[in-house]
Image 1 (cartoon, rainbow, N blue to C red):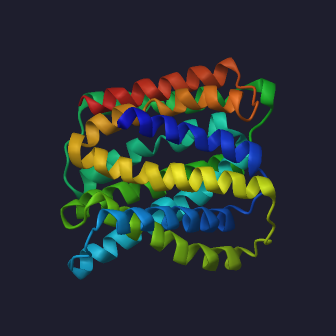
Image 2: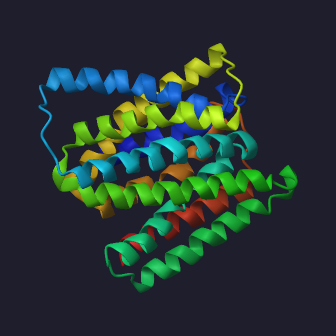
Image 3: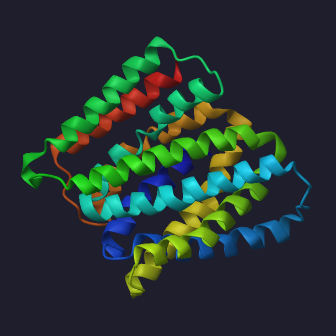
Length: 277
């Protein structure tokens, strides 16, 4: 299950960079959420899941998790992919695990071990290495900022998911998070003044990313955390930056340099180390 999740996550950078490079990111996320919600709604009906009454604060936290993670997090990640290319954006974006660890220690009082500190140093060294790739020239500062915003939003969302796990099963939590993102993205898109431009590639990317990345991926992610725990799930997610170097080369024909690949390996090693603190 976690390995499948890592493979699905590795598709996003390649698919978005090839088919939705010019797509307005918040509008793209809205369409992706619409397709994902249709898929998850079918699963909810087929599974016969009954909506149970949960505490209002749990619903609020789950909703906020959806707005931050699948919503703002994925939209800014999409923009970073457009500006930096998939191979670098995924390396920077997946440092979110370290932000999540810090927030967990601060908010949930989880211990931070020595391995976690070393892992964080390795991961951010990896990001630095990829950023020094001279063949590509100077990377867009905006792209790096968007990727870091995505990492912070995802980390906040993960902490919130962990806080409400006892109140929702995986399917209902996925449904609620996707719905939250769907309802807020049009507002943010309007505020940013995004142009409503649609192409065939836009819908190809939104369909693949929405149905597989969100529809299947989000359910697998939540279920994996429930059944296997955060540590095992995180180990699998650590494979994503490396797998993405392959998918971006095959699907989007992006030429990832040795610097980017080495950086991805350092990030993966850092993430793996922090699991064993």
